[in-house]
Image (cartoon, rainbow, N blue to C red; front, side):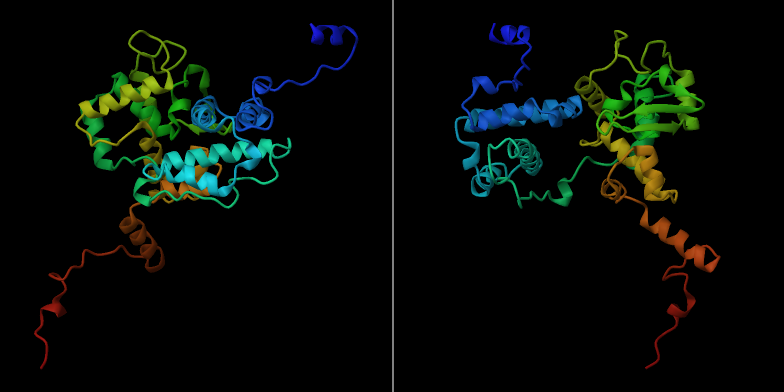
Length: 321
Protein backbone atom coordinates (compact mmCIF):
# COMPACT_ATOMS: atom_id res chain seq x y z
CA UNK A 1 0.00 0.00 0.00
CA UNK A 2 2.92 2.34 0.70
CA UNK A 3 4.23 1.68 -2.81
CA UNK A 4 0.76 2.29 -4.22
CA UNK A 5 0.39 5.59 -2.41
CA UNK A 6 3.88 6.65 -3.52
CA UNK A 7 2.98 5.86 -7.12
CA UNK A 8 -0.19 7.94 -6.83
CA UNK A 9 1.85 10.81 -5.46
CA UNK A 10 4.20 10.60 -8.41
CA UNK A 11 7.20 9.55 -6.35
CA UNK A 12 9.69 7.21 -8.06
CA UNK A 13 9.30 3.61 -6.93
CA UNK A 14 12.15 2.21 -4.86
CA UNK A 15 14.05 -0.62 -6.46
CA UNK A 16 13.51 -3.89 -4.58
CA UNK A 17 15.99 -6.69 -5.18
CA UNK A 18 14.64 -10.23 -5.21
CA UNK A 19 14.76 -11.77 -1.74
CA UNK A 20 16.81 -8.95 -0.17
CA UNK A 21 13.96 -7.77 2.09
CA UNK A 22 13.77 -11.24 3.64
CA UNK A 23 17.46 -11.52 4.51
CA UNK A 24 19.88 -9.98 7.00
CA UNK A 25 21.46 -6.84 5.49
CA UNK A 26 25.06 -7.36 4.45
CA UNK A 27 24.90 -11.12 4.88
CA UNK A 28 25.93 -13.85 2.47
CA UNK A 29 22.23 -14.54 1.90
CA UNK A 30 21.68 -10.89 0.97
CA UNK A 31 24.61 -10.95 -1.47
CA UNK A 32 23.32 -14.11 -3.15
CA UNK A 33 19.80 -12.64 -3.38
CA UNK A 34 21.25 -9.46 -4.88
CA UNK A 35 23.04 -11.52 -7.51
CA UNK A 36 19.91 -13.52 -8.38
CA UNK A 37 18.13 -10.24 -9.05
CA UNK A 38 20.97 -8.78 -11.10
CA UNK A 39 21.27 -8.33 -14.84
CA UNK A 40 24.43 -10.46 -14.78
CA UNK A 41 22.43 -13.46 -13.61
CA UNK A 42 19.47 -12.67 -15.85
CA UNK A 43 21.67 -12.63 -18.96
CA UNK A 44 22.91 -16.18 -18.37
CA UNK A 45 21.53 -19.10 -20.36
CA UNK A 46 18.68 -20.89 -18.61
CA UNK A 47 20.72 -24.05 -18.02
CA UNK A 48 23.58 -21.99 -16.55
CA UNK A 49 21.14 -20.16 -14.30
CA UNK A 50 19.79 -23.46 -13.02
CA UNK A 51 23.24 -24.89 -12.27
CA UNK A 52 24.50 -21.71 -10.63
CA UNK A 53 21.37 -21.36 -8.52
CA UNK A 54 21.85 -24.90 -7.17
CA UNK A 55 25.46 -24.10 -6.22
CA UNK A 56 24.64 -20.80 -4.51
CA UNK A 57 21.55 -22.08 -2.71
CA UNK A 58 23.72 -24.70 -0.99
CA UNK A 59 26.27 -22.01 -0.16
CA UNK A 60 23.54 -19.73 1.21
CA UNK A 61 22.15 -22.57 3.33
CA UNK A 62 25.54 -23.14 4.98
CA UNK A 63 26.81 -19.56 5.31
CA UNK A 64 23.74 -17.36 4.79
CA UNK A 65 23.82 -15.57 8.17
CA UNK A 66 27.51 -14.69 7.98
CA UNK A 67 28.61 -11.24 6.86
CA UNK A 68 29.64 -11.27 3.22
CA UNK A 69 32.31 -8.66 4.00
CA UNK A 70 33.91 -11.14 6.39
CA UNK A 71 34.36 -13.73 3.64
CA UNK A 72 38.02 -13.92 2.65
CA UNK A 73 40.33 -16.10 0.59
CA UNK A 74 41.15 -18.26 3.62
CA UNK A 75 37.49 -19.16 4.14
CA UNK A 76 36.92 -19.72 0.43
CA UNK A 77 40.00 -21.94 0.26
CA UNK A 78 38.62 -23.99 3.15
CA UNK A 79 35.36 -24.48 1.25
CA UNK A 80 37.26 -25.45 -1.89
CA UNK A 81 39.24 -28.00 0.10
CA UNK A 82 36.00 -29.83 0.94
CA UNK A 83 35.42 -30.21 -2.80
CA UNK A 84 38.94 -31.41 -3.63
CA UNK A 85 37.65 -34.83 -4.68
CA UNK A 86 35.49 -33.21 -7.36
CA UNK A 87 37.58 -30.53 -9.11
CA UNK A 88 34.80 -29.60 -11.53
CA UNK A 89 32.44 -28.90 -8.61
CA UNK A 90 35.11 -26.80 -6.91
CA UNK A 91 35.70 -24.82 -10.08
CA UNK A 92 31.96 -24.28 -10.55
CA UNK A 93 31.61 -23.01 -6.97
CA UNK A 94 34.53 -20.59 -7.34
CA UNK A 95 33.11 -19.23 -10.58
CA UNK A 96 29.66 -18.74 -9.03
CA UNK A 97 31.03 -17.01 -5.92
CA UNK A 98 33.18 -14.74 -8.07
CA UNK A 99 30.06 -13.70 -9.97
CA UNK A 100 28.33 -12.85 -6.66
CA UNK A 101 31.31 -10.74 -5.58
CA UNK A 102 31.21 -8.85 -8.89
CA UNK A 103 27.70 -7.65 -8.00
CA UNK A 104 28.17 -7.37 -4.23
CA UNK A 105 31.29 -5.19 -4.30
CA UNK A 106 29.76 -2.18 -6.14
CA UNK A 107 26.73 -2.48 -3.84
CA UNK A 108 28.99 -2.02 -0.79
CA UNK A 109 28.54 -5.51 0.65
CA UNK A 110 32.31 -6.10 0.58
CA UNK A 111 35.48 -4.14 -0.08
CA UNK A 112 37.58 -7.02 -1.37
CA UNK A 113 36.61 -9.86 -3.71
CA UNK A 114 37.09 -13.01 -1.56
CA UNK A 115 37.87 -15.04 -4.68
CA UNK A 116 40.62 -12.73 -5.96
CA UNK A 117 43.73 -14.67 -6.94
CA UNK A 118 42.17 -18.09 -6.32
CA UNK A 119 42.13 -20.77 -8.98
CA UNK A 120 41.07 -24.39 -9.26
CA UNK A 121 43.13 -26.56 -11.56
CA UNK A 122 41.29 -29.46 -13.13
CA UNK A 123 43.57 -32.43 -13.98
CA UNK A 124 43.97 -32.90 -17.72
CA UNK A 125 42.60 -36.42 -17.54
CA UNK A 126 39.36 -35.07 -16.05
CA UNK A 127 39.05 -32.02 -18.28
CA UNK A 128 35.79 -31.85 -20.13
CA UNK A 129 33.78 -34.47 -21.93
CA UNK A 130 35.26 -37.51 -23.61
CA UNK A 131 35.71 -37.06 -27.35
CA UNK A 132 34.26 -39.63 -29.75
CA UNK A 133 36.82 -41.43 -31.88
CA UNK A 134 36.19 -42.56 -35.45
CA UNK A 135 35.70 -46.15 -34.29
CA UNK A 136 33.04 -44.97 -31.83
CA UNK A 137 31.28 -43.01 -34.56
CA UNK A 138 31.33 -45.97 -36.94
CA UNK A 139 29.98 -48.30 -34.23
CA UNK A 140 27.03 -46.00 -33.46
CA UNK A 141 26.21 -45.61 -37.17
CA UNK A 142 26.35 -49.36 -37.71
CA UNK A 143 23.95 -49.94 -34.82
CA UNK A 144 21.40 -47.26 -35.73
CA UNK A 145 20.56 -47.02 -39.47
CA UNK A 146 19.40 -43.90 -41.26
CA UNK A 147 15.73 -43.29 -40.58
CA UNK A 148 15.91 -43.96 -36.83
CA UNK A 149 15.50 -41.27 -34.20
CA UNK A 150 18.87 -42.23 -32.71
CA UNK A 151 20.70 -41.65 -36.00
CA UNK A 152 18.94 -38.30 -36.49
CA UNK A 153 20.00 -37.07 -33.04
CA UNK A 154 23.54 -38.31 -33.63
CA UNK A 155 23.80 -36.58 -37.02
CA UNK A 156 22.42 -33.27 -35.76
CA UNK A 157 25.02 -33.23 -32.98
CA UNK A 158 27.96 -34.35 -35.07
CA UNK A 159 27.42 -32.42 -38.31
CA UNK A 160 26.48 -29.10 -36.71
CA UNK A 161 28.99 -29.19 -33.84
CA UNK A 162 26.44 -27.59 -31.51
CA UNK A 163 25.62 -28.08 -27.86
CA UNK A 164 22.79 -30.32 -26.77
CA UNK A 165 20.67 -27.33 -25.71
CA UNK A 166 20.87 -25.78 -29.18
CA UNK A 167 20.42 -29.04 -31.11
CA UNK A 168 17.15 -30.09 -29.48
CA UNK A 169 15.38 -26.90 -30.66
CA UNK A 170 16.48 -27.14 -34.30
CA UNK A 171 13.65 -27.48 -36.79
CA UNK A 172 12.45 -26.63 -40.27
CA UNK A 173 12.14 -22.96 -39.37
CA UNK A 174 15.90 -22.81 -39.01
CA UNK A 175 16.57 -23.93 -42.60
CA UNK A 176 17.56 -21.16 -45.01
CA UNK A 177 19.49 -21.33 -48.29
CA UNK A 178 21.26 -24.59 -47.45
CA UNK A 179 22.17 -23.47 -43.93
CA UNK A 180 20.92 -24.08 -40.42
CA UNK A 181 20.44 -20.74 -38.68
CA UNK A 182 21.35 -21.18 -35.02
CA UNK A 183 21.22 -18.73 -32.13
CA UNK A 184 23.26 -20.26 -29.33
CA UNK A 185 21.59 -20.16 -25.94
CA UNK A 186 24.88 -19.91 -24.04
CA UNK A 187 26.80 -17.30 -26.05
CA UNK A 188 23.84 -15.64 -27.85
CA UNK A 189 25.92 -15.95 -31.03
CA UNK A 190 24.02 -16.30 -34.32
CA UNK A 191 25.52 -18.86 -36.71
CA UNK A 192 24.76 -19.89 -40.27
CA UNK A 193 25.98 -23.51 -40.50
CA UNK A 194 26.15 -25.12 -43.96
CA UNK A 195 24.23 -28.39 -44.00
CA UNK A 196 26.57 -31.36 -44.40
CA UNK A 197 25.56 -33.67 -47.24
CA UNK A 198 25.23 -36.64 -44.85
CA UNK A 199 23.01 -34.63 -42.53
CA UNK A 200 20.89 -33.57 -45.49
CA UNK A 201 20.33 -37.22 -46.45
CA UNK A 202 19.43 -38.16 -42.87
CA UNK A 203 16.99 -35.24 -42.55
CA UNK A 204 15.37 -36.26 -45.84
CA UNK A 205 14.89 -39.82 -44.53
CA UNK A 206 13.50 -38.73 -41.17
CA UNK A 207 9.86 -38.28 -40.32
CA UNK A 208 10.28 -34.73 -39.02
CA UNK A 209 6.89 -33.02 -39.23
CA UNK A 210 6.91 -31.26 -35.87
CA UNK A 211 8.35 -27.88 -34.91
CA UNK A 212 11.65 -29.56 -34.06
CA UNK A 213 13.49 -32.19 -36.08
CA UNK A 214 13.92 -34.40 -33.03
CA UNK A 215 10.96 -35.36 -30.86
CA UNK A 216 10.18 -37.83 -28.12
CA UNK A 217 8.10 -40.97 -28.68
CA UNK A 218 5.01 -38.84 -27.91
CA UNK A 219 5.91 -36.25 -30.55
CA UNK A 220 7.07 -33.54 -28.15
CA UNK A 221 10.41 -31.66 -28.17
CA UNK A 222 13.07 -32.98 -25.81
CA UNK A 223 14.00 -31.28 -22.55
CA UNK A 224 17.80 -31.03 -22.26
CA UNK A 225 18.34 -33.43 -19.36
CA UNK A 226 15.79 -35.90 -20.63
CA UNK A 227 17.61 -35.97 -23.96
CA UNK A 228 20.95 -36.63 -22.26
CA UNK A 229 19.49 -39.56 -20.34
CA UNK A 230 17.88 -40.99 -23.48
CA UNK A 231 20.97 -40.53 -25.65
CA UNK A 232 23.26 -42.01 -23.00
CA UNK A 233 21.05 -45.10 -22.80
CA UNK A 234 21.17 -45.47 -26.59
CA UNK A 235 24.96 -45.26 -26.54
CA UNK A 236 25.08 -48.11 -24.01
CA UNK A 237 22.67 -50.14 -26.13
CA UNK A 238 25.09 -49.75 -29.02
CA UNK A 239 27.88 -51.18 -26.85
CA UNK A 240 29.89 -47.96 -26.73
CA UNK A 241 32.33 -47.25 -23.88
CA UNK A 242 31.05 -45.43 -20.82
CA UNK A 243 31.70 -41.70 -20.78
CA UNK A 244 30.69 -40.92 -24.34
CA UNK A 245 28.04 -38.21 -24.45
CA UNK A 246 26.28 -35.77 -26.73
CA UNK A 247 28.88 -33.08 -25.99
CA UNK A 248 31.65 -35.45 -27.01
CA UNK A 249 30.28 -35.33 -30.57
CA UNK A 250 30.75 -31.55 -30.58
CA UNK A 251 34.40 -32.14 -29.75
CA UNK A 252 34.61 -34.80 -32.48
CA UNK A 253 33.35 -32.31 -35.06
CA UNK A 254 35.99 -29.78 -33.99
CA UNK A 255 38.64 -32.50 -34.25
CA UNK A 256 37.50 -33.46 -37.74
CA UNK A 257 37.64 -29.83 -38.86
CA UNK A 258 41.15 -29.48 -37.45
CA UNK A 259 42.27 -32.67 -39.18
CA UNK A 260 40.92 -31.26 -42.44
CA UNK A 261 43.30 -28.32 -42.04
CA UNK A 262 40.78 -25.72 -40.84
CA UNK A 263 42.13 -22.76 -38.86
CA UNK A 264 40.81 -22.10 -35.36
CA UNK A 265 38.76 -19.21 -36.76
CA UNK A 266 37.12 -21.49 -39.32
CA UNK A 267 36.36 -24.03 -36.60
CA UNK A 268 34.87 -21.28 -34.42
CA UNK A 269 32.64 -20.23 -37.31
CA UNK A 270 30.98 -23.66 -37.04
CA UNK A 271 31.16 -24.32 -33.30
CA UNK A 272 30.48 -20.77 -32.17
CA UNK A 273 33.31 -20.76 -29.62
CA UNK A 274 34.03 -17.29 -28.26
CA UNK A 275 37.39 -18.28 -26.79
CA UNK A 276 40.01 -19.86 -29.03
CA UNK A 277 41.35 -21.68 -25.95
CA UNK A 278 38.18 -23.73 -25.98
CA UNK A 279 38.90 -24.88 -29.52
CA UNK A 280 42.48 -25.75 -28.58
CA UNK A 281 41.14 -28.04 -25.85
CA UNK A 282 38.64 -29.60 -28.22
CA UNK A 283 41.21 -30.33 -30.92
CA UNK A 284 43.87 -31.97 -28.78
CA UNK A 285 42.80 -35.27 -30.26
CA UNK A 286 43.80 -34.23 -33.76
CA UNK A 287 45.56 -36.95 -35.75
CA UNK A 288 49.13 -35.71 -35.24
CA UNK A 289 50.67 -38.33 -37.51
CA UNK A 290 48.42 -37.37 -40.41
CA UNK A 291 48.88 -33.64 -39.98
CA UNK A 292 52.65 -34.02 -39.66
CA UNK A 293 52.65 -36.00 -42.91
CA UNK A 294 50.66 -33.26 -44.63
CA UNK A 295 53.10 -30.65 -43.32
CA UNK A 296 56.12 -32.58 -44.57
CA UNK A 297 54.46 -33.12 -47.95
CA UNK A 298 53.84 -29.37 -48.19
CA UNK A 299 57.58 -28.59 -48.05
CA UNK A 300 58.92 -31.62 -49.95
CA UNK A 301 56.23 -32.08 -52.56
CA UNK A 302 56.17 -35.85 -51.98
CA UNK A 303 54.15 -38.13 -49.74
CA UNK A 304 55.71 -39.86 -46.74
CA UNK A 305 56.74 -43.43 -47.58
CA UNK A 306 56.06 -46.48 -45.45
CA UNK A 307 59.71 -46.78 -44.48
CA UNK A 308 60.35 -49.14 -41.56
CA UNK A 309 63.34 -50.81 -39.97
CA UNK A 310 62.52 -53.93 -41.98
CA UNK A 311 62.33 -52.18 -45.34
CA UNK A 312 65.37 -49.93 -44.92
CA UNK A 313 68.14 -52.00 -46.53
CA UNK A 314 71.22 -50.27 -45.09
CA UNK A 315 70.01 -51.27 -41.62
CA UNK A 316 70.32 -54.91 -42.61
CA UNK A 317 74.05 -54.62 -43.23
CA UNK A 318 76.28 -55.92 -40.42
CA UNK A 319 78.15 -53.27 -38.49
CA UNK A 320 81.89 -52.97 -39.20
CA UNK A 321 84.14 -53.85 -36.30
